[in-house]
Length: 185
Image (cartoon, rainbow, N blue to C red):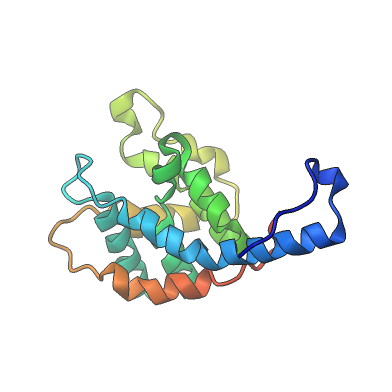
């Protein structure tokens, strides 16, 4: 692809400039599923667990798929920790922000808050409150997020669990990330 905008400040851009940028943006969006799949593949290194972070993500998604979750939720479970690639300190928020244009508000909320909810299982070992998630106790998705952690996240570190491959989930990832539901801003 060729072409460069004429402006050096966005406020000086013309309709033609922004039409050109739309072509570039469409190309970027079409390559987004590939980038996400590459991020998952990059999580296939040892980080102290009995399985890799990729193995954890695949195992969690396998559990969600076998439980009959929607394809949206299965992919969200697969990608729930992909934020670790970009920002381990707030991985839940990063993963949720990445998914937000492609998923429902409910799925977005669950992924955004799963890190806090997951602390139920280990925060006490670090001198933190394992019940910190209870600040959301009255939220309509509280129980659903508890179940997300209980059924898919915290149980998915088992090296003997029969887990589906990334290739199994790839078509689902591509379908979900094919086009944003909400405008990209």
